[in-house]
Length: 332
Image (cartoon, rainbow, N blue to C red; front, top):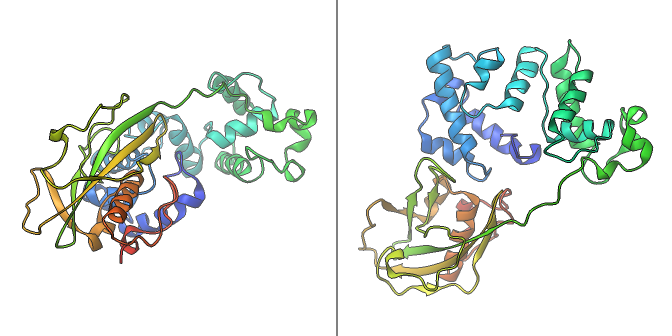
């Protein structure tokens, strides 16, 4: 969960996750949709799929016990260099170089590494190797991560409180905030698409499940088109789930992913309760939406679509990673 997500955002999810899946065995035997529902809102959903697959492999190949060797850990789904090193040092007390974004920042400032990221990773790793102790390496790894998260922050670092200040080369030069050096960011490309919010007279919403692999794999969503880089001149009739009195919302829903920005035009319609769901789709009661594995982008779409249909929204979702209100409480 802490891969690419902050501690503050993770805490409530982590506590809930442990209640639902208290052991590796419990997670291994869980329904994939239950795992995705518990993860919904954290983003980077391939992590949840990998975590589930990882638990299954640990149970199948290691009798429910994680391997304590680097190669064995790296062979598990979703475990790369950083996670394998963190497990080895923190869980097993073995010396390993644990380098997340916080540690990269601390070390780059400590040694005043002029090379730009990501090319600087090897150089930073070399410096980290020098200062990583043979004993208590798990404590050291956590200390370095916490130092970057709490004191050696990207903006306005608390250098006067830092235990490494006397040895920090960038602190001596008073240019701490300029490290780590980074190449100029490329402009994020934009994708466009259409999403269709259909409310039936009996208070149910048309939903479907995304394919298990790929972006947002296995998550719930309203019907939507492919996300294209070029805008379509018009919305083809075959994109709509069925014929209805469709209305286009004036404002699209904007959502930022890691590598691209998505703008979805929202089309809404109401239909009679007798209307059956198309193949591969289903109708879900509004009060049951909290049990759906809705990613943040689809939460935004649902909120916007329901609002356009006159369903009162109590509190909007503020951003892609923070739920300011659950779907369960958003409709009256």
